Length: 417
Image 1 (cartoon, rainbow, N blue to C red):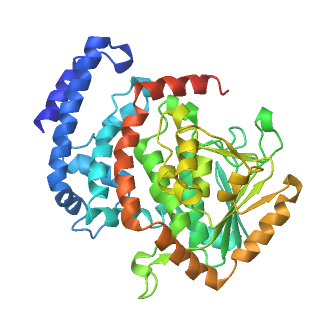
Image 2: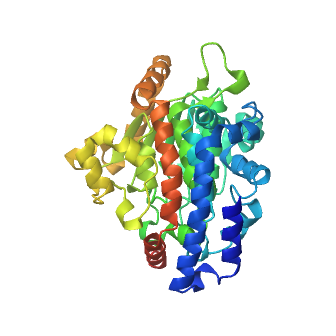
Image 3: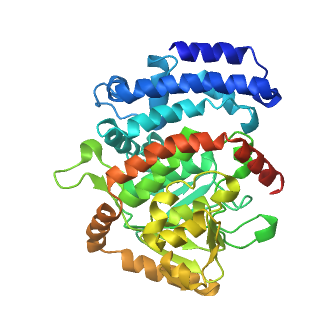
């Protein structure tokens, strides 16, 4: 693509982004903007053709990372090559060109296509290769230990514990990978009937010895350049969160009556569920919260889009409260009446264990599976979710490279030690 080549020529003659003056920044943005406009026009017309070529007529199921890598090889200039993305990953966010935005342009076009989009969503609902490899050992032992998650099968319950105790379970790329692996294993294991997600005890000085659900996105990782669009922001939404809600796509193992294998899930919130932690709650069948817990989506402070929170929150709270939480940064405490729109049960901290077990017992039934499936179809039709995620793919890519975001997360990260 001529515009892409011209952008590369302009950027090659400039200093690195963090060292550019106003004139150089303007020249860089103009060149990148022209190339992105050309890519968007091309994909407006040819998205299905590109996707069919990359997936051999939709006979191959490529995950997000595989798709953008294949596109870079097959269509030079359409998306950045893997080497260019690797170089960007080694830089702090403030010193990147923002080549991930070009990945966002491609994925927006694919997801909004009624032909290619559903195929990509289905690909992301399939078990990961890591989970398939670990499944025999997990079925034998009933235990998985990873860097950020511990999974234990006990009495038919997959007990998934978030165990990043030094960072309040703030999510990064490693945790997204570990979470998807654990969710896959729980859904694949026939010995599991119900799933539980709960935060473990913290080693962080401010909360040492206390359980915490999640502090949301790891702002230090974002500031240092370690939160990728494809590997974190999109994989999280289309991977483990959607699997919690809708189950695994069975692929060749599907039957005439079942294409997805889902199981009911319960979340137990101790301490707080901030940002991505609160977003997680919208896909659970039952939520129990400690009476001293609180919930927030600090999108306005961070400057980014809170995942699919904008798509799902209003379903629980109504539009006015959703805007107060997302746009105004309102914090909702479990003891407030409004919290009952977000959780099913509030328990005193010392009674949380008993409340969790009662909730798990209520979810353990064959009729629950059929009814949750019908609720999912009614509440979150695939076409609506797909349209939202198509726009999210681009808007979130633009946001993580916004000057306001880079400045904000840098200050948050510096003060969060």
